[in-house]
Length: 293
Ligand code: P6P
Image: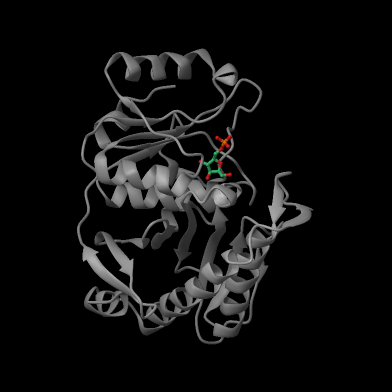
């Protein structure tokens, strides 16, 4: 079964299925851009992070596809300063994208990801509780898609015909002992330091590549916790609420896990700004329930 059959089986609208088809059709063009190498673009995104050509190309490819589809009313992209309003006489979706998360790792051939969330109400700033679907594409030894909707989380593998075939349904995050600590040790708060020391004393295994999608995916598969905490001089941490944290929090909860900023449930947050950052603890249910930072 491919993802379109899966979406039809799960009762999704023709418009949503068309939107997912359009996104799937951009994976090959984005992967092909990798062949050109990671040429510097000489520009910086609004977070002051150096953009490489691939970040911008992936962003352009996805935005063009959304614009031509007429299915998307509003797009928020990590590579854009503002939300983009689009002509959408065929649909009404709000979409957030991190077009190429972890791209600084591409020169080392480590896994990177593309992160999406969909708001059927068409408003990406209306609150994370209004996310209706969230998914990521993990570009690693295999190209995988993990897709979450109200019925749960499923995994698909990209085949040689450019389609995603279903490989696993009803994915549940197990309790486990992997941890990704995030940030620089010297910038940790005492509370985060104590939490990480507790994991280490309990024999947790450190797994941290610097790329959120694969680092989260291993927690989804084996169980444990990924964190990118508040830091001494960065109380909101590093990860972007709309483009990275919200979609993953939706996926984690639909897989029976949890996600918090250390105080509140991520999906209870209503974004104040499009570029809002939040601290993040995400993973196995019991571990997240125990987080009070
Ligand atoms: P650091 C990539 O830039 C990213 O946003 C996430 O993919 C990743 O988890 C994090 O930053 C890594 O940040 O500070 O460890 O390089």
